[in-house]
Amino acid sequence: MNHEEPQHASPSDASLPEPSGSPVRSCGSSSLDADTPRGRDAIRWARKGSEAFLRAYPSLRLAETDQGEPADVDGILYSIMKGCVIKGVVEIKTRYMSLDKLMGPYKGEWLITKNKLDRGIQLALGLRCPFVGLLVLPNSGVCLSKQIADKDGNWTCSFREEVTKTSASVNGGEMTGLNAFIDMTDAKQFKIQ
Picture 1: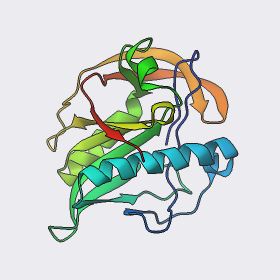
Picture 2: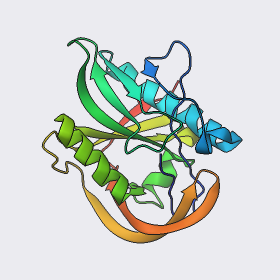
Picture 3: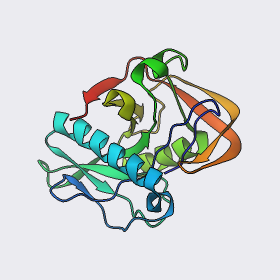
Picture 4: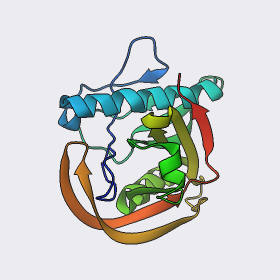
């Protein structure tokens, strides 16, 4: 997963390794940012967030992309009720901030690399399913979800674009690039247990 946030914040995110007994399935081993303590913590929270989302949709499961390789998306949602049919493509981000901070100083906007969203939309279009984003906020114990695009590749959320300097990864560094700021003010909320 990519890791970006405005300089004045210190959030992070990472892809998810497999815990036992989870409805989330991973085929890869941890590497990259996942090999650091901060990366492992972001993974732990991303997993909790995805599990909170899945509890609200009991017929869905999440198959993850390989954690040892960079991927265009974090996983595929599929239905166990309809013969394991693909129901969505998902991107999951962990941001170390509160919901109040997201909705206040950040005006309810989720920063994510525009190119990452474009690649996710193209994959979802090719699979003829929606593209969904999950934003996990450990400081508030909540996961927000937002459909980003429909099965026809049409944007279904409000967003703006801006070139900004952001954190390159959960472990620091900087990068400048075109980012999308997705309006999360009407996102669905799922309490993390």
